[in-house]
Amino acid sequence: MKKYSIAEYIRRYLILAIGLFIMAFGVALSTKAELGTSPVSCVPYVLSCALPYTMGTLTVAMHIVFIVIQILLLRKDYEPVQLLQLLVAFVFGYFTDFALQLTSGINAQNYIMQWVLCLLSCILIAFGVTLEVRAGVVMLAGEGTMTAISKVFHIEFGKVKIGFDVFQVVTGLLLSFILLHGLQGIREGTIAAAVLVGTIVRILNRRCSRVYRLLGLEDTAEKTAVTVQEKPLIITIAREFGSGGHEVGQMLADSMDIPLYDRNMIAGIAEQSGMRPETIEERKQKLSSRFLHSLYIQNYEFAPGEKEEQQRILDAEKAVIGQIADRQSCIMIGRLGCFFLRGRKNCLNVFLYGDEKSRVLHYQEESGETPEKAARMVRRQDLERRNHFRYYTGKNMHDVSNYDLCINTSEYDLKKAVQMIRTAAENYG
Image (cartoon, rainbow, N blue to C red; front, side, top):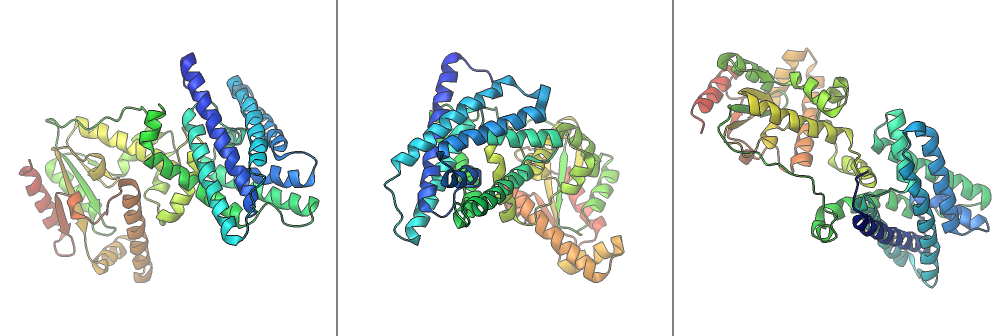
């Protein structure tokens, strides 16, 4: 946890309190929608319908259980400052009961109105979460427990978050049927909250930077731009699967007597990211669906400092590629090198492509696969590479403006492609 001045702590805890109240108001509205509460609220809500205790009181009790779990898991690694989660729990519990009183007169007259209240509750919860996370002083006990589980059992936080939400919903379902003899507090609105809240948090983080700057909550991490100066020549090669990118890169490196960086960057990326080389190779460009990935990655909005594996790999790749480009002339294959090194006048960005038939044949000859399996592999890899490029750069992989030279290896053999790139490199700049 960062250290601040006393005045800054007061300001940030005030923002945290505002965030907690907005979240509590959102939770209260979700109960009035009667379409089910969010996963984190469904257990105390169901219990409040069956027991003579308020939802706020039961929320505090649940948070106390979460704090005990953290202490048991982390033991000597548990930071005493995190006991402030207890204070936060009591404040959030009080705000929840207060918000329920404020909204006691609200009644949804029809199904459309129920969804209006449900969506409004998702927006309020998301805004509250954003303020809580950006306050940066102490997280809610639920997020703290998920972080502890991720740390102790070495499970990616996003997977823990999904499992944690599922566990709470299942627990709420069981309690509902056991104590209330029917389904209550968990409906289609619960699923909507699970999907929408994190997504809305991501949107707020991206679109409300001016508001956060005014509140003094903007990320102040320095963003260093590439300094354009006389440096070694770098050739990046982006390519469609089966277009001969590695072969071209190797022949070019041999002819120019400069090193080639492809899979041999993995060791440096592993050291930079703290991940195993096998994991990095396995996760390389694995993004078959941007929509599903967006649903998954939104889980990380609830835990400051946590990053999903692919983002950690990407950050490490950017650092390693920058270090290599600063010290020597070389050729880099893939790994978004053309994007990370954009703006460098000493960087020649090349794109290799070809028609599907020739690329399938190339891969088939290289791997020995049947034509059917080779075709499926080419199509799958094309999809993953396009989605990966689009998701992390915001650009189309096939947009020629990303590159200085594009070569169709279906029309030119690989040796001719090498000659073309070398000629371009010799006359570059």
